Amino acid sequence: MHNVENLLTLNCDSGRETAWTTDDARRSAPEISACVRQADEYFHAASLVGLPTKPLLLFYCAQTLAKASILASDSAIRLNDLNYHGLNTRPTTAIEPDRTKLRDYVNNPLCWSIENEFAISHAGIFAHLSRVCDDVEIKQGMVFRFKELARIIPDLSASFRRHYREPSHCLYLHSGPSVQNGTFEVYCSVETSDDITAVFPEFLTGFKSVKSHKYPGFSSNEITELQFAALELGTIAGKYLVRPHARGLHKSMPTLFACMFILSNIVRYKPAFWIEAIEGRSSGSVSIVEMLCNVFERRYPNDALELIWNERFTFGTPGYIS
Image 1 (cartoon, rainbow, N blue to C red):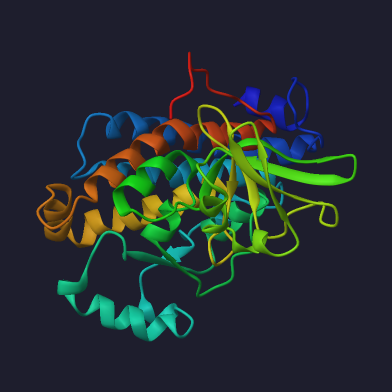
Image 2: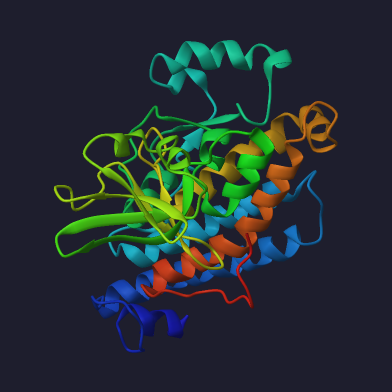
């Protein structure tokens, strides 16, 4: 707990820039420490079980680490202010036209699928987490479906393409985006420029198709930054050009939080459907679910660490994994 106080008051080295008052640090340090300790217990418990229950324990970990990250990022927030997930599954809370569609989906079990399971935003942890991560402003009633969240997770990009035979919205970068001598350039590690425009059709207007070595890309003498794409880092290595979710979400921590909320709700409230799904009786979506759980375990604690310390902590690997 004293180490947390030292971190918040800048009495130890970190990337944090603003020192908290001693009173604020002493109020928040016990709450942050308790959340981190609980998260560690949840992680340990999740490692002892399989997919029938693992997402539920991982979501509890996501929630407590999210609380710790929010508390460490905003001295005005107390733990009692974070009583709600910030997500629910009640169709009546969604904005139209999603409200009617979700009501029909919920009432027809024959239409249920992992991909179409959803979360709806409201006040609580999720909105705070997106804010402190410098992601999109979360308004109440936004709908987030599992498949569209998985589509914007860089570490799932290759598996997403193989499993669904659809483009992931994450393209591994060869180089850029950068501006050299007044010319904007970006190159992606894909086969053709069509693979890029399939995700970012905006490149068809105001950009010129170019190549660097064998990699396709686009350049422009008029445009110096991309308004329609975000730059995100992979867990192990590399940068990705990401097309944000339709609601604007693109940061890994709130995205993984929402994914685990959705999966944990299936575990709790649709156990028969969940077991059928992970046994592969109706689809092969268990492969995406299992990989997502693995990505979460590697990525989410690291994201929390980076947010709390305001530093970049990287993983190492002996080679590039394609």
